[in-house]
Amino acid sequence: MPLLPADLSATIAEHFPRIHRAALVLTGNPWDADDLAQETFLILAREGARFAGRSQLGTWLYGILLNLDRRLRRRAGTNNAKLRVLWDADQAAPRAAPPAEAPLEVAEWRNSLWSYVARLPDGQRQVLVLRFSEEMSYDEIAQALECPLGTVKSRMFHGLAALRELLDQEGEAAKNIPRFPQEDAHHRS
Amino acid sequence: MNQKPRIFNAEQPAETRAEIHAEVRDWFPTAESLAQQLGTDARRLAKRYPAPNTAALLAQMLREQATPSISADQAATPALTIVADEEESTASIAAALERPRGFAWPLPQMAAAALLLVVGWSLLRWSADKPLGPAANLNNNLAEQPRENTVLPVAIPVAPIAPQEFQTLSAPEREAVLDLLEEQALGTVSLSI
Image (cartoon, rainbow over all chains, first blue to last red; front, side, top):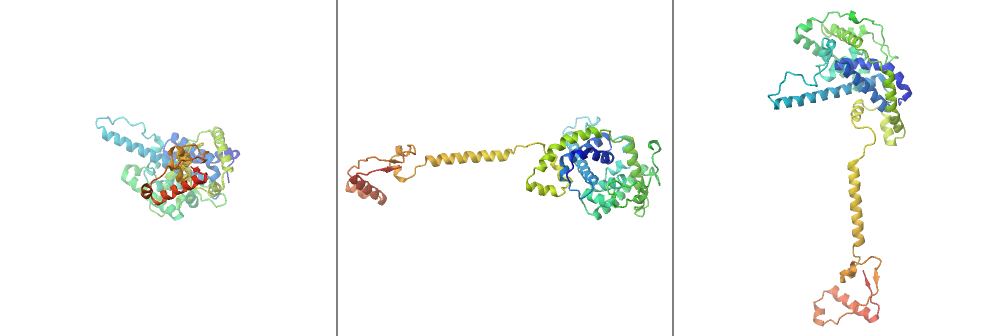
């Protein structure tokens, strides 16, 4: 089911806000989220003919987004590793100044649970994003991640458990999690 | 708030937000509140940093990007059509996009083709220059002459050969000398090169 250019406007209007929200949760800053979301739709424009329609288009887009995010994180990790090599080689170099590649996560994200989720393994992190941010079903998540249903459920359980362990280790931060959280009154529409 | 359905699979009864959170209730004591907080944080972030209103601009850009790609896919070879029929992994698509767009010159293949061309041309030249028969070895100068002079009617005076010298010749050489003497006697000496 090739996606014709005439469909693009409607497709963007329907899916872009959700893809952008997932990208924002994943990256922690709106700039990378803009880039990731736009690149996702760029891939749709280039490779839309490869979409056969066996899954929902939105599910397919989430799959692309998650792969792009994984690539972004891998590159960031490589850059950090190179910086460490440089620092280790030059002991006299000052380390006080943050590198240009320092993360730009916004405060709202750093103070949210998603900053802890970002420290989980890719598989667990992605399942938590698709389930609790994007409210997708298990079937949709399995299609987006191209993995069995049982794997999705397992990753979700272990992801939540790992998140609780992280919060327990942090101590004070865990206490800030309300028993029954409410919507943020400042941003209620 | 809990009545918002998912947009991706309208045929399937959508779980409400409360159902999504309640499902993890029995996993461990704080699981449900963690799930709720994750949802709340995601919605708060989305409200604070909404998607940029660039849909029209993005659509225009994508339309420009999509047009050559789709036309190329429509003219794909059967082998490519098979690939296109199957929904390709998003991982492979993302990886494929790291390659530069547009026509990429296949430099290794072109170098190999150029090498083959040179080798083929050299073989052709070598075979053209190669002497065709053993008789040409009788005179190297004749072997270097152009191929159009393949048959030269020449009269080669065969010097008298002493029996002692004849005895020293090998069998093929003796036969060649005898042939020359015979042809000279018939007046039809020719030399093929």
